[in-house]
Length: 351
Image (cartoon, rainbow, N blue to C red; front, side):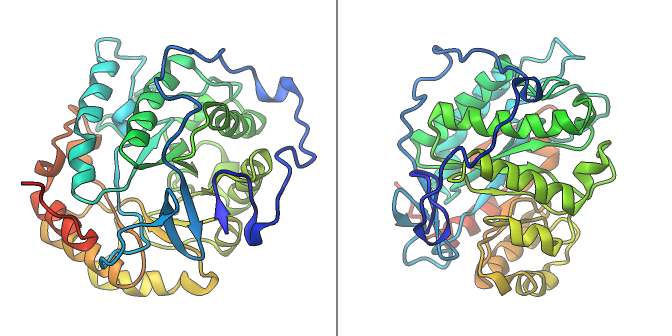
């Protein structure tokens, strides 16, 4: 049994959080002192995510019991819900986060049980943004974390999971070297632990093979495997993965190191989705697509095929939710897709 809290390894064997990992303060970089007024629920998480076998559980219960998506984690990519651009001070980052948080209940009512949120966000529709929770030495910026706290804690209140991403192409150059990249992972994991968040799972990097990463270390399966293991050493109870590029494939070293498998279907034809899923099933780990930029009927079919083949599916409406001006309209974002999510997850209208 793999659980976020209490700390446990596969098979229920208890592990020490410290696991002989001793990292000098100079490596880690000091995070800002926690702002005790930033969150209303820090350290008192109500929502607990776990994996039992290859199926997801929230608060000890299997997700979507009796529905086609039973045991899965249907999700939406909202990486820029905590976006900022230090080159554009006129952008109101707080209002942007407010707009997303206000719509969380509407997405949840359609069966969404997880959002992907990024500490370096995602492509905002233009080049040159400076958007990072990390400083050059890998330490964390409290102003950015406050927005992450608001989203994580809002999700916690609604029984939802956050897939929290660390690194994104176009932003990783902010970290000055490999040492800082490692420090950033450790600092992010320790921050999750200090906050007591039990509804968070970690994504080391978004589409790690992407040529937009400056650090070659981040682009390699070996580097990702090292960072996944570093995160697990820092907190063995945290569920950790990293996402492949949009071809729906993952390197075998990454598959073996990950607690769950994060894939993207942007470049995968709808009818090829079952084959991609079958190719990853041999280790019996949960398969989660957390990025597919199809829309309307093709996206609804992709979601249905993913579920039918035992994989969670995630919607990416990049022109709406990820590109400026960011729009968070609940199920109005794509009525066809959200209607299909309600069907697959067994949700009922409250009217």
